[in-house]
Length: 408
Ligand SMILES: [Ca+2]
Ligand SMILES: [Ca+2]
Ligand SMILES: [Ca+2]
Image (tube, helix red, strand yellow):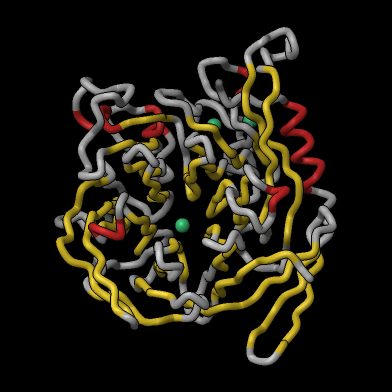
C-alpha cells in the first residue's frame, strides 16, 4: 500500500480551509478555567485549562498516568495526574535556545516501568564553530519522585550530520515502535537539497535500534555512513510522528509556501522534497506538484494554504469513539486542532483513477477546533481525552496545557 492522493483530495482541503467558522467562549468555573469550543463539524468540546508554561514543546504520558512536558528553553517537567506541575527533572541536556532549537521531544523506551529508559532530543552547537548546530538524541534513565526526578546514564546515541548554519527545521520528533525501534524525524535545516542527499541524514526519517545503532533491515543498510540509518527521504520539516493501531507509521511536515503534508511512511520511499511539493517556494517560484512525477510518494493529504502542522496523534481511545483512527494535527499558523479522516481509496494513476486494483490510504480534512491559539503538541491521554499544548513565541507568552473532552 502506498500513500497516494488525488488532486481532488487536495482541492477539497483548500475549499475547507477557506470556509471554516471559529467559535470559542471562555468560562471561569471556580478555579478551573474552561473553554467551550464549537468545531467546524458542529461538535462541542470542553477545554479544561490544566497548567501554564513559558515555552512548551512536547508531552508524553507515563504508565502511572502522570506526564512529562519539555520546554524549548531547557526545562523538563513532571506533571501530576491532574496535569498540574509536580516539579522539575534535573540533569537534563543543557541547551542554548536559538530560533527553532532548544530542548525538543521526549519519549519512553520499551518496558519503561522496569528500565526507566527515555529518549530525549535537543539542539547542540558545534564545539569549534558556534554558527553551526544540529539536533541530537540522548538515551537516559529517568528516576521519578513525588515532586520531580532526575536523568542519569545519559548518552548521545544519534546526531544530525552535518551540522549547518541557521536555527531552523531541526524537526527532532521521536517515536518508539511496538516492535522495538527508535524513529527520529530529521529536518532539512532549511537547506533544501540535503533531503535528497544520502551522505547526510538531514531531510530524512531514520530508524535505529533502541541503543542507537542502524538496523540491518533498513532499506539502505550496507551503503555505509548515515545511509545505513535512513528509513525514508525527501522530507522538509517534520514536527509530528505517530503509529496507527496497525503499527503503520505516519508523519506530517511543513511545506514551503503551502503544501503541508500528512504522509503514510513506507520503508525506503522518497517523499519528494525539494524536487516536488504541492506548495511553492517562499519567493513564489513554482515547485512541481507530487503528481507530476511517479518517483515520489504523494502525501495522503496536503494543504494550500499552509496549516503549519506541529504535534500528531492517530487517535486510538474510547472517549471519542467515532474518531478512532483519525489523525489529530496541531496547527501553528492555522491556530487550530485539525481532524483528518483516513480511508482506503483506489490508487490514483494520474487521471486513470479507478482502473487500478491497488488501494492506498488517503486523508480528508473533517473538522477544525479553534480558540485563536497556535498549537504546538497533541497527545492522547490514558483516559482517551485529547491534550494539547499551546505554542509561545515570546518570553512573556503563556502556553497552556488544555484537556479536550466531549461537552456535556
Ligand atoms: Ca508527544
Ligand atoms: Ca512530499
Ligand atoms: Ca507546487
